[in-house]
Amino acid sequence: MSKMNELSQTVDELKTAANLLLSAADSLLDLFSGSGGIPNEVKETKNPAPIKEEKLTLESVRAVLAEKSRSGFTDEIRALLEKHGANKLSEIDPKKYEALLEEVKVLGNG
Image 1 (cartoon, rainbow, N blue to C red):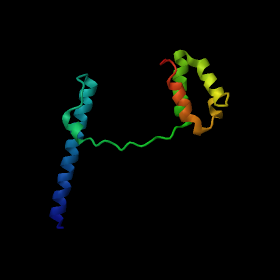
Image 2: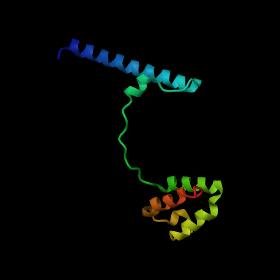
Image 3: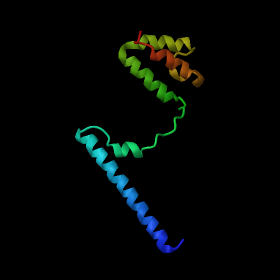
């Protein structure tokens, strides 16, 4: 490939990147100015990220439990921790986090 072709291709790529940045900036401006929605151009260029299962961490489980506790379910959460063989969250085996969260999510929904 000649130097001129490489230069031309690089300029085209820069123009495309600049247009995408301008579109993103306009979208942010619309979003924060209160006019709402995302323009169709941005929706079309956005590729959906592959869905991957996140590993539950002590911090993420703690955040869910803290929210439920603030909602008035402290005693129920304490009972669930004891059911899973612990007095506090840090004593629970990380393999049990998913089961614990499933039980916590139904608090207040029934």
